Image (cartoon, rainbow, N blue to C red; front, side, top):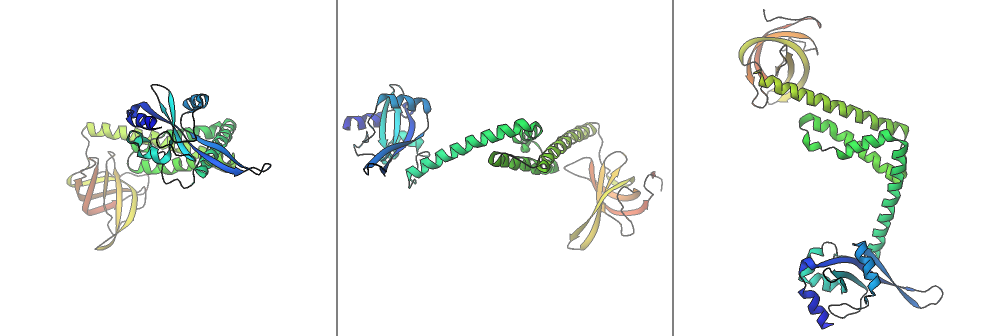
Length: 314
């Protein structure tokens, strides 16, 4: 035993492989009344474990300290194919096996329960796989939506598009978890998944097209208005903003050349969405977007009925 202990401690780390974690469970036989022992294994390497069983290695004592074992690890010396049964405490204290300590935690209070939990999880996963495969076969449109959601990298998108895509992705993934658990979804749930998938694809396409157009516009030298000047366009939206000076109404206007401007809506203006407007103000181009300008001190604000156009002549 001492020779074995020196032997395994001297092995280079890369030559040792964890094969399984095992525990010996003692139960009183229903018929015999005697205490019966059986071994339960949490296997990390199926192929190596098969060779271990064929070797008939003694698992009743630790190869390092010689103590009898109730829970232990099976370790293989890869170059020679020799297997060792090592008690959990000895395993944790052998320097060349430290890389496996995350797998074999001394916090296990009941190895048998841990193994049972692992087997239960594996059984549930297998059952979930069967339910999922059957459901996806019956509903390929949902399978397509889930494949998209599972493979989408949200980090490639920025700004509002990333936020708009986050909910559909999370929703479809949550539905998939229900499929794995119960094997079914309602018709309304399936329809929702298909709809948000289709809308998300359209949003991505629209966003990419808009981004390409923006880059082309910037490359052509287009910029938002700068300095004091008169502009015309249409109102896109308004919103109430609260500051230290009170509540004011801000307006977003799209100009005829496609650039946008943002500033305070004059108190006498309606600011109705879509209405054509013409006004004079002092503009400053955004440092983040050359096609966007902020304006202040608007004057000579003129509104026209929706559908008409206002030229730059006051």
